[in-house]
Image 1 (cartoon, rainbow, N blue to C red):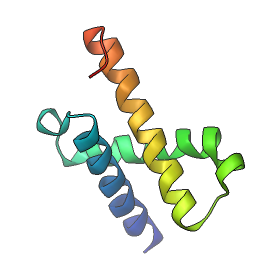
Image 2 (image 1 turned 90 degrees about the vertical axis):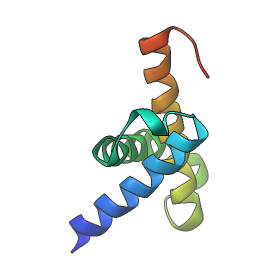
Image 3 (image 1 turned 60 degrees about the vertical axis):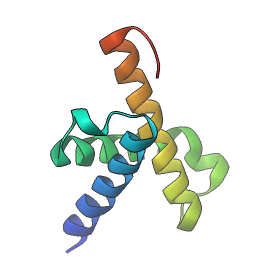
Length: 82
């Protein structure tokens, strides 16, 4: 059951980050889940110690990590950030 919740939350975080970075039309639900999960890990490593690990701050650090991941992908793919 935890795996299903983990995938749903990862998909939501990835989807919200892709809307902010304007890449939603380019990626599907699977890529949104992958971006959300990897972004959550990045956010947890970068912002987890300073923001705390749970509650709203956990969601915020996951979202920031996903946005950073999409910015890096955009830089590599196009050479410029949106």
